Image (cartoon, rainbow, N blue to C red):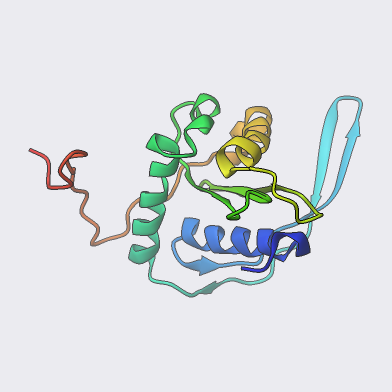
Length: 173
């Protein structure tokens, strides 16, 4: 992934997480071209989306996606729970070693949102994805949850859910 100051890293994250959320179908992101807010109504113009290609096995993508739901359920993305209304999303927080840059990416069944917060001058800032970038996504989801939070895809054929004990990592029961 490229350095966040180029803008390419956020787009690459969006494509990668979108591919996971669509169970292996890679699409270029639909970028917002225009937003008009007149008299309380918002109209958004999206760039047209090119054709898609299957690039990964659906079962492999589902397993990674399912693991990433743990970031919000019990990890560094727990701060999203208050705006999700019980809906599951896949997410990941991240930061550079010196805390100069922090990011948060969230994927649902209908959207991928990437937020980057950082310093352009390269100085350390002690930022983390959960404390600096996650609040940006939380505010967006709070305002637009019904449009952003379609359910994650169901498990493809061949995936059998198994409950694990959180203490031992072994099969529960």
